[in-house]
Amino acid sequence: MNKKITSFSLIVIILLFASCNREFILDVFNNTGGDITVISSDRALVETRYFIISGGHTRVKNPYWLIVDGARGRWSYYAAPISAKGDYVVSERLGPLIEKFQIEANGFVYILSRESNAIVNELPNQPLGYPLMPQKIEPKNH
Image (cartoon, rainbow, N blue to C red; front, side, top):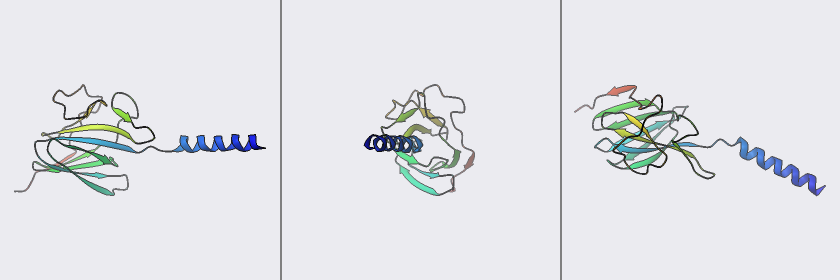
C-alpha cells in the first residue's frame, strides 16, 4: 500500500512540474543615449512601466507588446519572445526564461547572446526577424 501511495505521489509531482508554464522575461539594455520608460503589455493589454537610465538595464515582464518612451519619441513593438532554446535564452533554475534585448538610438531592438551582461558595442548576428523595428513611431512634442 505504501509503495502505491509513494508511486502515485511521485507521478503527481512530476505532472505538476511538467505542466508549469515558465515566465518569460526580457532583460532590456538601454543604448539610446538617454533615459527611457519601457511599457510592457501582456496579451490582455495590462501595462507595466519600467524606467531605465541611459546605459542601464532592467528586467521586463509580460513582453507581448512593448512601448519605449524617451527623448526621441515613442516607439511601439510586437516583442513576443522568439524561442525557448538556442543562443539567446537564459534558463534560470526553477525560474523564468530570459531573453536579452538592446535598444539603440535609432529605435532598433537587437537580441543579445545569453552571455551578455552589459551594453554591447559589436552586436551579434541576428536571428530571422531581428533587429526589431518600431511598428509605430510617434515623434516627441517639444
